[in-house]
Image (cartoon, rainbow, N blue to C red):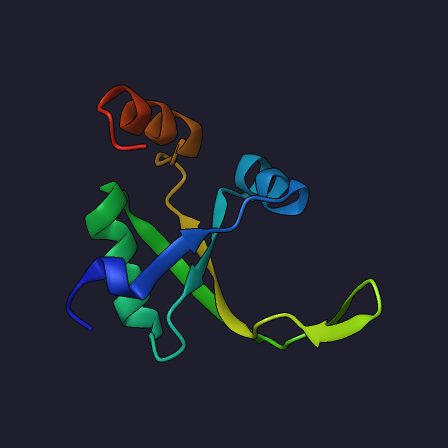
Length: 105
């Protein structure tokens, strides 16, 4: 995977991940299932122009979900916890506003 957009699928923004970003300078991404830690590191450094200290990954299993009387499952995915250098920071909200101003949204 040479394209970083194929490696990093989307950021995961929950209350827990926002706390991790503020307290431990860790960012969480949903990544491709076959992405390796060096590929994830290179993709984050290229996309966001930051220094990455460490990458941890885990495979998230599918979970049962119910909508009315129908029972299904969520999709399984791979999650990456990326620890940034203490001087670096990714502001996802500023990136979103910049994309909206440029007409990308």
